[in-house]
Length: 158
Image (cartoon, rainbow, N blue to C red):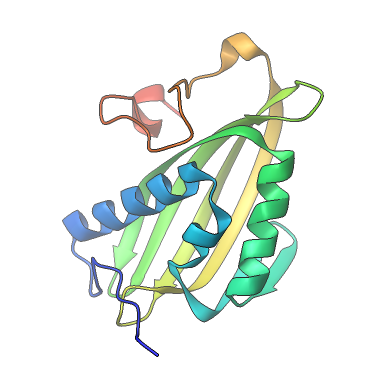
């Protein structure tokens, strides 16, 4: 069995922590649960809202459920702090449900990585509220990475 390596690797510098955050954002914006789960150790431990998951299979299932409910999902992450093998981020994302109601969710995540750059712990706190379609801010066209010239959280003042 070959071991996965996901640069950048800890210990993080400010630049490599920012790069790691953007890579995570880009992955999540694909909404490809199997691909996203590969960034985590096989026994990774998550707290996502009030749900707990351990292992890639459970993470994949959680993400599939999430993106079945959260349609046209668009995520923006921003580095908050880092130290050694840990990174803290703040984020916001927008989505609509199957009735067409739009939401914006806000949150914070604490991440810890192994020596190969795979995340082995993720703690996420998330709150959301309904928004009107004209209040949306994350407006790129596809289910992929946020364009380089699209504003980030600080640019929006959120």
